[in-house]
Amino acid sequence: MEKKYMAEPYKIKMVEPIAVTTRAQREEAIRRAGYNTFLLDSEDVYIDLLTDSGTNAMSDNQWAGLMLGDEAYAGSKNFKNLRSAVQDLYGFKYVVPTHQGRGAENILSQILIRPGDYVPGNMYFTTTRAHQELNGATFRDVIIDEAHDSEAEHPFKGNVDLDKFQKLIDEVGPDRIPYISLAITVNMAGGQPVSMANIRAVSELAHSYGIKVIMDATRCAENACFIKHREPGYEDKSIREIIREQFSYADGCTMSGKKDGIVNIGGFLGLNDEDLYQKATSLVVVYEGMPSYGGMSGRDMEALARGLYEAADYNFLAHRLAQVEYLHDKLNRAGIPIVKPAGGHAVFIDARKFYPHIPQDQFPAQTLAAQLYLKSGVRSMERGIVSAGRDKQGNHHYPKLELVRLTIPRRVYTYAHLDVVAEAVIDLYKERDQVKGMRMVYEPPVLRFFTARFEPIE
Ligand code: F0G
Image (cartoon, rainbow, N blue to C red; front, side, top):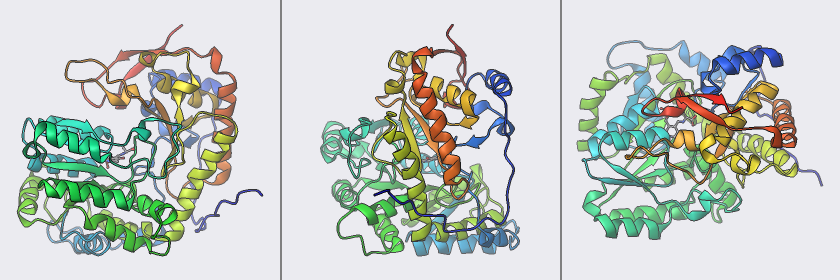
């Protein structure tokens, strides 16, 4: 029987035309962009799957909220709405707004890390690790081995390997580990979720040594939906109950509202400890703004407060996961090497297996992202060796996963758009032997993937 994918639980009230380009235009555009999809102009992109970050379509309810922005410098009523939404949905006592997720990561890393510390995490995220390292910490990956294997079918591939975590504690001592950074879901592993049982176990182990649990809440609603679908005992719980339980095991969270807040900009730090909150507020005024706006306008805070509630709606989430699964299933049926199972926000192509003849230091994923744009005007993102950057000795990190991410923005594209994407990827796979790798011709010192430039190897 043919599988059914849930139809959109919304209708379209406003449209934004998108560019249909020719091959010649795209050749010129990608050359100008140094073969880095981050450097393309949005006007030159047909279907934009670069990221699900800040690219969401807001609801009429959120747009209405924009009109209620209280733009007072201090004490905006929209901040109170945002704070009470976070308290109600996530259960944190204190909320420090920031301009986006990395603003919260900056403050959190500064207040918790001392030089020489170690921060374990379930795989790294680029900005999260950059802030840890800027504050003198060493990141240690403690995710389960399956997460590094694109073929491994595991329902909770984002889980922490408790033995790896324990080994790090034994090796460096709990005093050198201020917190474990637990991402729900794990972006770089393929948008893979963490089970409630694992969250609970991580929290017990960490707390038994006085180590804090800080969650990266960026896609916490998607994680909750996976728990409802896949974890025995949670099928009848509401998304809101599951979200609350997830955070009941944490001491704090950093949040990029640009994902599961369904807005275009914004974020926050959630905390329970008053002392940490005081420290965070003294830094937020340096880097972001007053503790009652933290880099957001009143109207942005209102849209975020409303978006957090909308993201905790089961129908919204079930459709979102269905869209990702639809694209995943189409590519999988065509034999394209992709990360399995389907994740929460994106489909990830395994570029090493797609272009096995291109060595990793000739950037197979970066090459595939450029080729996909050339073929179809679809913009995707490299998540491999370029994103992983260099170690302290200046050598490339060679991540096991060399991926291209097809990221699906929330409420923006239809299943027909996803058909276009799938067809383009399938065509490229047929021509894979003819493609050569690239060389990097410009590289910035940190977070290089954003602005690095490349040239095709002739
Ligand atoms: N944590 C995770 C898991 C993320 O995916 C991101 C952003 C951040 C933190 C930082 O948040 O962008 O608001 O400062 N991810 C985007 C992406 C950029 O495309 O995956 P931010």
